[in-house]
Image (cartoon, rainbow, N blue to C red; front, top):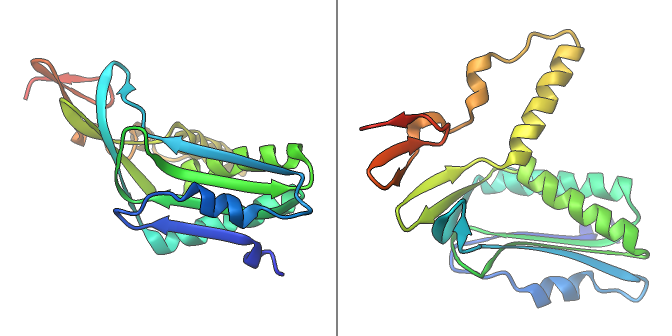
Length: 196
C-alpha cells in the first residue's frame, strides 16, 4: 500500500458532518500502538462576543493538493501508519466539529507530533477560509498560523537577499473591509475606530 493510499483526505460539502468513527476506523490497524486525534469545534464565545456559528469556504482542488502535500511532509518526518483529515464547508453550529485529524503510528510520540504538525500546517497554508458569525455581526478571520507563516517566509526572502514584501500588505487579507458592530460604533479588524 503506497503512502497516498494510507491517507484519507476529505473536504466535506455543506450539510455533511464530520464522522469521527469513520476516520478512527480508517486509521486503526493492528501494528498501530497509538492513534492521535484533533477535533476543532465551534465554541460559543470569542473575545466576549457570542458566536452563533462558523462558516467555511474553500478552493477545494487546491485545498486537497495542499493537504496531500502536508501529509507527505508528515510521513517524511515521523513514522506514521495512516492519516485521516476531514474539514467541513458551510455553516458549523456551536459544539460541532469543523475539522478532524487522526494519525496512527507505532508509538505515541510520532502520532502526537504529526497530528499537531498537520493541524498547524492546515491552518497556516490550506486555502480554507473561516467567517465567525456573532449575535452582533460577522467577520472573516485570519489564522494566527497563517500570519506567522507569512512572516517566516518574508524573513527567509530577506535572508536570501531578495526584496522584502511591501509593508502595506502586513495588515491581512481583509484589512478594514470587514467590520463587526460593537454597540454604537463600528470597529474594523485592525482596531481602528470609524463612525460610518
